Image 1 (cartoon, rainbow, N blue to C red):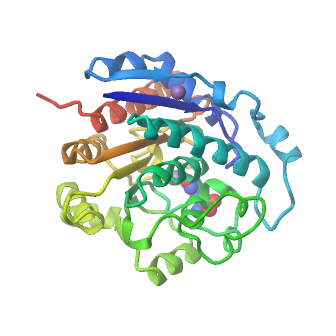
Image 2: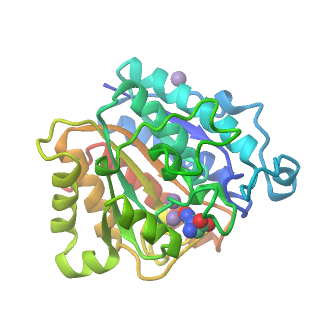
Length: 310
Ligand code: DIR
Ligand code: MN
Ligand code: MN
Ligand code: MN
């Protein structure tokens, strides 16, 4: 079995420079060898598939604004996500397990679209402090890393340029579940309610424990254990004391073990077909915090790919 690591050095889905350096930081710290040591073959094409995409620091990014609605950098986000969708779909079609390393979480629009083209019945576990389900009509920041889920679901307001040329609604609301939420915008709360989307907030994690939450989450999206699972992990789901080098940290997050438990439990299902590790920004915080955050990105990846404690 082969893991295809897809590093996507991209930051234009949000405002803070540096998250585009995430993939290289994880790879440089030994991610590929760590995955190999679990018994996988590993392929990695570097940033080659995205070489001609602007690095999109805030300055550069502004030049790529389309002015369409309130979305910032919509054209470049759409372009890179379309490219990523193709790359992920190609790996999946070869029977490989794509691991997309971000980069900001707008990329999950591409990675999940890619997964869905090979596995239309897949379900999505979205692990995040945020719901990332704003639409171009509801976003207050204009940052597209707060919006990818709405495009995947095809919510009202997402059928717009430049995305409408390639994004098709490919995810049903009942095939999506969240764990870790604690910073959800008012409009997002309404969207989650109206679409009956299953959510395990930090309140639920406190109340039931992570074991019960993951069990209920998997039972909701994959009751018979036969559907492929795409795990999209924003490292800001964990507490800032666990993975602090990230653009939008929110206190009160998952512990180190809770985050890893989610990945381990998904690995145990044997249903994982794709993984995203998103929002590691190695320019935020002191060296120790960066090192710790990069290490957590790697260990979450290993846990999802079958590393066990014994
Ligand atoms: C906020 C923050 N809901 C937004 N979203 C973040 O910009 O739409 N997502 N930080 O990761
Ligand atoms: Mn490849
Ligand atoms: Mn996110
Ligand atoms: Mn987040």
